[in-house]
Image 1 (spheres, helix red, strand yellow):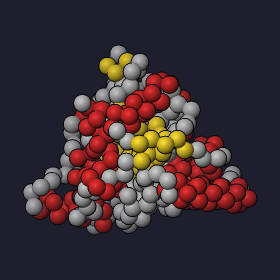
Image 2 (cartoon, helix red, strand yellow; image 1 turned 180 degrees about the vertical axis):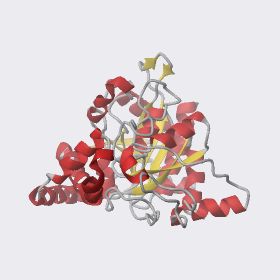
Image 3 (tube, one colour; image 1 turned 45 degrees about the vertical axis):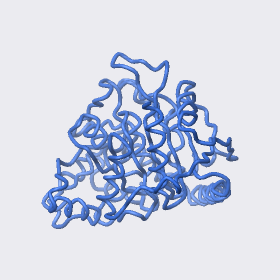
Length: 357
């Protein structure tokens, strides 16, 4: 953003960061809305350092408080964006999503988030993590807010009309907390979708391959930063970056083969269903002191980035998940074909209305 530095939540970058001389192109819609007095810029937010983590914990600049469930992780990497929306400080926030970084904090903070189709929103002027996976998308308290956020990112965007809304949803079975599985199934049933069980072979291998590709690209993007300023990078992020340095060309090649199989499997599924439904996370957001457990409940987010398709994370009621701060919702992830954001949000609006009834 013109006039403001971009630090990516990292001391290694903040040490030399200077105010930007121009806006990133993805801000053009916001600027136009400001000129029409239809939107107001509230501020920039914190995040997991270098946009490379799913807890949202940042030892250098402080961890954003999860306003919905204090004491629990806000989720990352777009932790500050989710916290700003959940607290009411902003109606809409932007986040980046490379392996789940919009959807995971949305799930942790009980709000909605949209991971966009790869390449749909310009990444010029956005600090990269893994360029073939990076996306920019909106976060909001509900589907209407996401639609408004998309209209800022892509002026002219509208939600699909009822007759174009997908009604056949493929339910992909994945091993999640039983309360979350029940919440997802209850929400689909309440919305009146026709639910078809679907299966994908080698799902664990697909998830592993997606992480291999993300970690290898993250290292290539940040290797010079590590060389120059490793002492100014948090231990958790530095450890992951150095792990990416150890990934061999053979492993990357095998991961690309697995990713191609996954894309083929998705293409086959789109011939049978309009959307795919899975939990956004396999468990509920852990307490800050148990944050290491996030990696066991990350779910099916990074494979969506490898496929380049859009996905919507939306809170749905869950029974048996009460905390000291009230019931924590589950989060359903609806995945659609490339370019289907308008239909995803239309289906999300139906589901949202059903679970609120």
